[in-house]
Length: 165
Image (cartoon, rainbow, N blue to C red; front, side, top):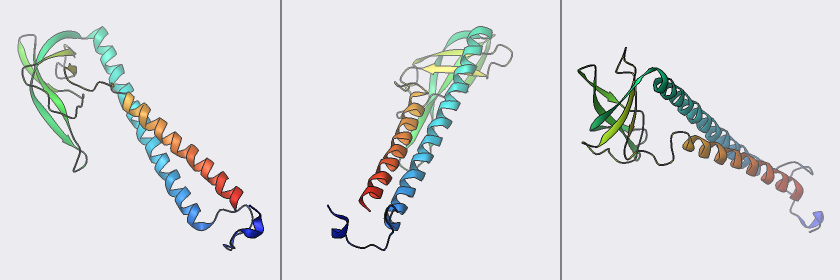
């Protein structure tokens, strides 16, 4: 298509028209927010994995029992659940809330693997049946990849818009 056949939008050649620029900026900001959320999730899961690894070496392992589920609501429509687990440490009952999240409540009576610090048994890492299939860091990786993909999309769209105008 010849440049003379395009409508005049009051923009110089190579510049992105304002409506397109606004959309590109919004999609870019969305992409940056998604990348930031993904990186934050990855860092948190890495910290939890490091704590669990330390407890595997320095702590004790036992089997506990899920006694309840603790609901966590971030948004009106999204509620996740964490297992509340009871286990015995040096003859005393300890109840901890695991960091593992799932979209359904955990079933009371189910076993849960517990790694705990003998000096402070309430500092524990819990792995209960029925938790996330993907693992703690997979959501962070997925968010980061989606955010980067949206940033790449912004770059492609900006180049396309520039070539047309």
